[in-house]
Length: 229
Image 1 (tube, rainbow, N blue to C red):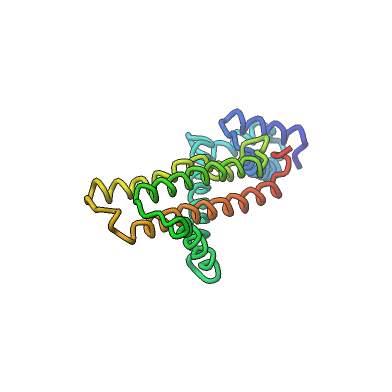
Image 2: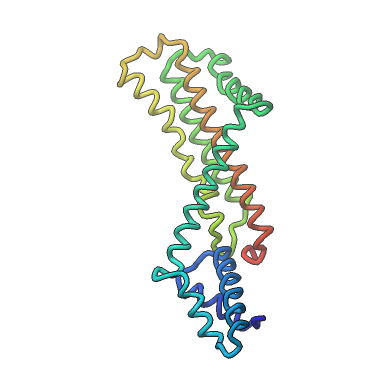
C-alpha cells in the first residue's frame, strides 16, 4: 500500500508530464499506484522510484500525451453525441409538443402585429436570436460555478458564447433567398415560416446543449468535489 506522500509524488509526476486535467490526473494516479504496488509486491526489493519508471515506460515514447489526446477526443465525441441525442428528442413524443409550441410562439408576432414586410420579419428574428443567445450565455455563466481545477469532462461543454452568432442563421437564409435565388420574399407567404423554423432549431439545439452540460457538470461535481472547492 502506497503512502500519502507517494501518492502526492504521483500527482506531481503526472502534472510535470503535462497532465493538467484534474479528473484525468486522478485516473492516471490510480493507474500508476496500482501498477507500482503490483511490481513492488512481485519484487519486494524494488524501490518506489524504479517501479514508477517501469510503469511509466509502458506508456511508450509519447508518455501521457497520447492518453491525453485520446481522452480529449473521447470526451468531445461523448459530449456531441449527448447533445445530438437530446436535440433529436425534441422531435419525438412528448417533447415534440415543446418544439411545436416554440415554433408557434415565434410566429405569433408576425400575425399579431401583421408584419408583411420581409425585411421587418428578418430583423425581428435576427434581434430575437441575438438577445436570446446572450441571455443563454449569461444564464449558464451565473448558474454553474466553474471548477477551481480543470476537468477534461467539461472541456467541450458549457461554451454558450458561440451561440451569440445564432442570429447569422436567418441572416444566411435571407441573403441566400434574396441575393442567391433572387426570390421576392415579400410575395412568398412561407418566408416567415422558414425563418421561424430556423429560429426554433437554434433554440432547441441551445436547450439540448444546456441539458447535456447540466448532466455532465453534475456528474463531475459529484465525482470530483475537490475540484470545485
